[in-house]
Image 1 (tube, helix red, strand yellow):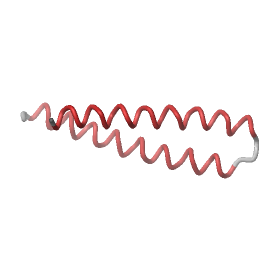
Image 2 (cartoon, helix red, strand yellow):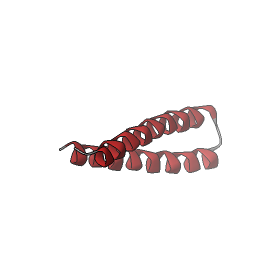
Image 3 (spheres, helix red, strand yellow):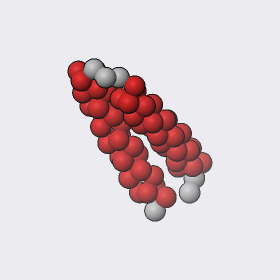
Image 4 (cartoon, one colour):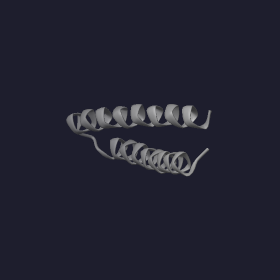
Amino acid sequence: MGKSEDKDIQNLMTALQKKETAIHSYTEQIRAFNDPQINALLEGILHNEMMHKAEIEEQLERMKG
């Protein structure tokens, strides 16, 4: 694997860590709010973050071969 691929994997790992942090944060915010409209919004964002995390994991798996 070349330097470029190593850097790409490193960047994906960083992005994955950030997605995990975001998922945790949105989950905590949903627990903190009692407003159904705010929670619906946060749940939608949380769902997107979870989908992005899965996509990053797929790319990492592909690149690591």
